[in-house]
Image 1 (cartoon, rainbow over the protein chains, first blue to last red):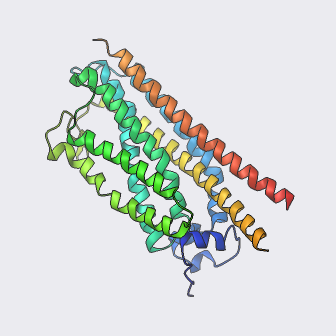
Image 2: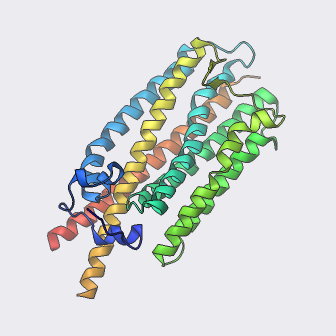
Length: 268
Length: 43
């Protein structure tokens, strides 16, 4: 069975908003199973409070353990406790843009109607967690390195990521021509992903005050008694990030449906 | 140098930003979905 392609993701969102019928799941590629906003919302509604609750519980456990239960680092002293919020923030800043770039590819190549909505929903929390990473890193740097800021590869490339987020948000909210703006925003999301491997490898490529990679696929150089709360905070903040993205997607979809209805009413 | 003021500042800022973006997203979602439901009832 051949499925006619719409002109754009935004077009598809307006053409088939919340239609409950349509093709059977078997007739569609797996990725398009949730192209129908009604089907996506059926999953997102129960998933949102689960992600939110699980995220908050894991964050509270991880932060309590990081502040109270873990010992001091032999070299850095108590300041090592900033690790438990700095690393999840860095992970979400970089992971957020990676997810945004993947969603942008899906939007451009397969014209999935929800991919653009997901990418736009990721941008604001991604920018905020990137900013949190920069500020907590700066606060950590003062007692550890003796300086708030250094223009080295890691910190500069992370700051560039924050500016990329700002530019993406500005572009996504610019203009009335939704189709061309949406396409330009998606291309920008893909091009901006070039910064992610630069951030990741910056501590290897250039001399830096920032420590080298502590956790790799081969293992960790962090002592196990200091490492375990990090798992709680990384998973906790990731679940919370997912809940925030789901809430923002639900808000965007509700607004898109309301606007589509108003347009139909105005045309009638 | 005592490290605790730095640690508390970092945790306080992260907590405030995380709470703010979560509450903002929740309220935006509730507002948009409530407006849509209201429209459904009017219709």
